[in-house]
Length: 135
Image (cartoon, rainbow, N blue to C red; front, top):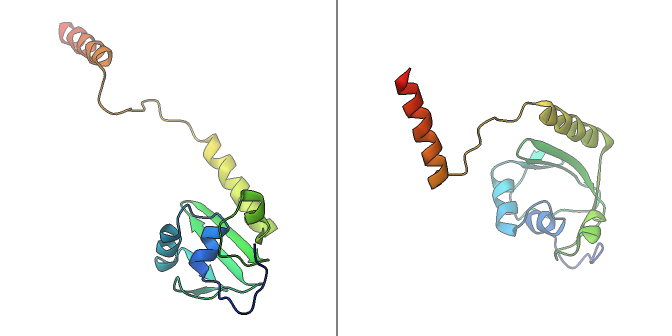
């Protein structure tokens, strides 16, 4: 992990990949292009240079992170190294916890399909349909 080397430039898509917000650099670049990553309250392109002290707003699905860049790196390292690259704001952490609690409180769907029914499932369905026809 390199910290604040003035010779090398740190692209925002590479930094997001190194900080483990996205599994691939191309996913990070797509998120930046689609406006899901905001740098200092401005929409940017994937090649935008990120610096220490910048504020990032990252939206992944329903979850939104507001973070401050603490260190720079272009190389993806371990998770503990990635967590040293940024600091999440308290408000952002609270919002994520509230969202997680709200999603957990919602009822789970009763019927979850795994795809095509198995032979056993098909027989149960046929028995159910035939019992409905008798009524």
